[in-house]
Length: 133
Image (cartoon, rainbow, N blue to C red):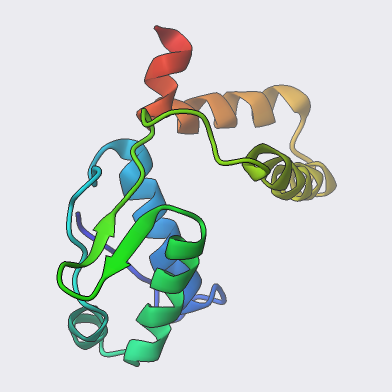
């Protein structure tokens, strides 16, 4: 898994780390059981504070994407094919999706463009394989 961060972005670094790991899992680049770098190693690689990486890992742990063990460190916990989503996930996701769709509408994207972009993005994720199978 290759993480790319934009240290000049307005998106907080911890959020970028979290997002890139979720995307890697969705694309199948990181699968259940794959280890993640230690917080100190990832921080050193990017020249950032290890607390920033820790915050990202803690979010991922709370979301059930990774598990953290003192012996094995952080590893991917969830595979897109591992079963139904956790209770409440779909409702929370739908709320966040509503904000993104509202932003698209406010900025002038029409219905067909939004649907086309969503379909193109989803096809890049392993979950998209289920929708077309």
